[in-house]
Amino acid sequence: MLEVETPADMKAHIGQHLGTSGWVAIDQTMIDKFADATGDHQWIHVDVERAKREMPGGKTIAHGFLTLSTKSASARAASTTARTACGSPRRCRWDHACGCRRR
Image (cartoon, rainbow, N blue to C red; front, side):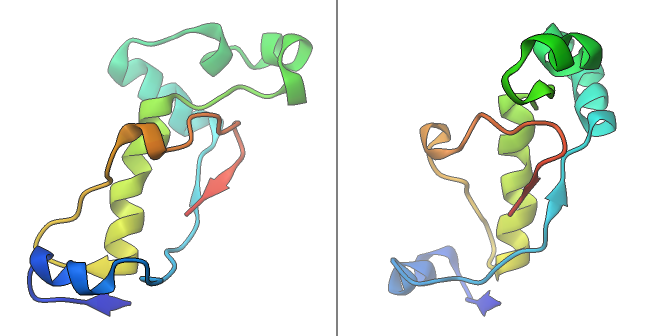
């Protein structure tokens, strides 16, 4: 794990591997809880039976903001500093199926 004193010290490590976090399992329970918390109960996220019939791969898809929210824990596991930022949401993947693991 990379350890730095201040966020500004990260500039010296641009382009370098910072470390690898552990896996974060995104399962249907997590997706359902996120749907309850946000009010986003769109079927592609929460209707397992319909997803089996109609979705490519036959699985529900995690909410984009749910997958984005896992980035902060992953960043903390790979490096330590006073503050950590994900960067642009446009750089994050939004297509994580239920049962996936991510770092």
